[in-house]
Image (cartoon, rainbow, N blue to C red):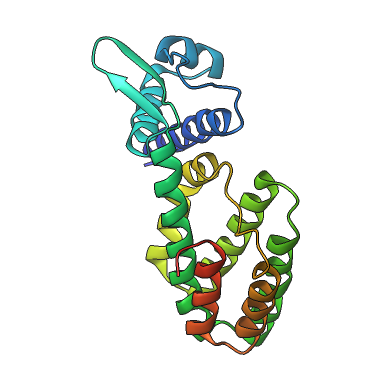
Length: 202
């Protein structure tokens, strides 16, 4: 049992290390990923590295052509568009469930996260703030499926949401104000509408 746990932990560590390197740009689109070299670099065997690469392929960060190459996948415009749509609708769905289940203290703790989203000064900080809000709402939801989905998509969300931001017009500030008020009142329908409208999906 201990051996299986250790093997699983090695795969998790390799997956996280390689995924973080892709997300932060240390590994660039098109870079070849050779399991022997990576295993040597990480000081582990090839098996957990291969399993980690398979997991990264399943979430689209790595592409594999059998007997030809394993490399970091390119980030397409379609991938960005799809991920923004997914993120906006998923966060809104989690918000709808969370507002009904959160304690008063958890609701109060949500409001500064909305403020951080509003005040983000770059896309990178906006994405970080959005994922902080998402993670907080997942915890408030008490929903195991939401939690597992968040854990499994964290890396690809952070990479593919590059460039994401809210709308940039005269309605932005009122919408953020309404979102904050609706969350404070536990108005799930109103909060979800405001969040989706802020991202062009309502």
